[in-house]
Length: 257
Image 1 (cartoon, rainbow, N blue to C red):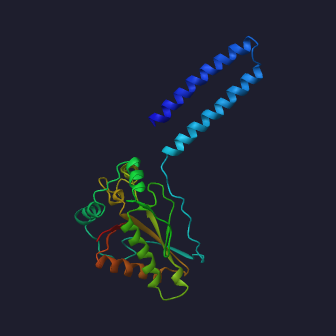
Image 2: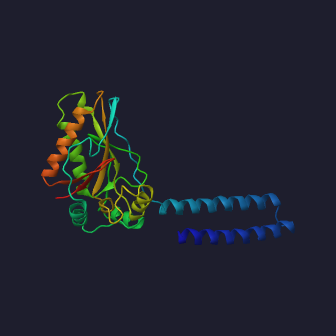
Image 3: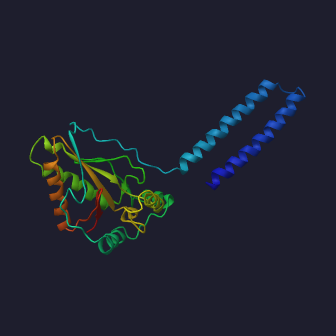
C-alpha cells in the first residue's frame, strides 16, 4: 500500500509541474491550448495505467474457479449439521488444533502476504470443484488447501459418489462453504458470527480445514445422499484421515494423518 501511495504522490507532483509548465507555454503562445490539454490527458491516462497495474499486482491472487457442470437439476437441498448427520465429534481444542499445526508444519496464515508466499512455494494449492462436491461463493476464505488436504477433499468427493448405488442419486453432491482463511478473515467471521467461530488459531488458517454445509439431491428427499455422506465421513474418520466437528450450521472437517 505504501508503494502505491508513494507512486500516486510522485505522479501527482509531476502532473502538477507538467500542467504549470504547459500552462505557461500556452499563455506565451509557444504551444496551443489544445495540444496542452492533449498532453495532460495522455499523462493522466498513463498515470491511471500505472496505478491500476500496481493495484492488480498487490491484490490477492484468487484462483478463477470454473464450476463443475452438474448434469442434473437438484430437486432437494438439505443442511448438513449435527442434527442431520449422526457423527462422532472429535474434541476441537485437543485434536483439531494440534492436528492442524502438525500437518501444516506450523504454516499459520497471519496475513495475505504469507498466503501468497506459500502459494508461490506450493505449500498451498488451488482447489476446484470435482466429483461429488461443489464450492459455494467464498466471502471470507479462498479456495486453497495444502496438497494433503486437497487430496483428502477430492477423495471424500469420489468415495461419496462411489458409495451411492442408485444411478440417478449418484449425481448428488455436497457443498463446501469455507476453506482457507487468513487471521484477518477469521477475525471478520468472528465479528459477524461471534458465537459460531474459533477466535484463536482456527484450523482454517493452517490450510487444512473445510466446512460441508449442504447436500443437493435429485430426489424429493436427501435420505440416500445424506446416509452416503455420513458413512464416508465416518470411514475416513476411523481411518485417521480426517477429524470432524459437527456444528449447528455445518460439518467442520480438519485433515489429519
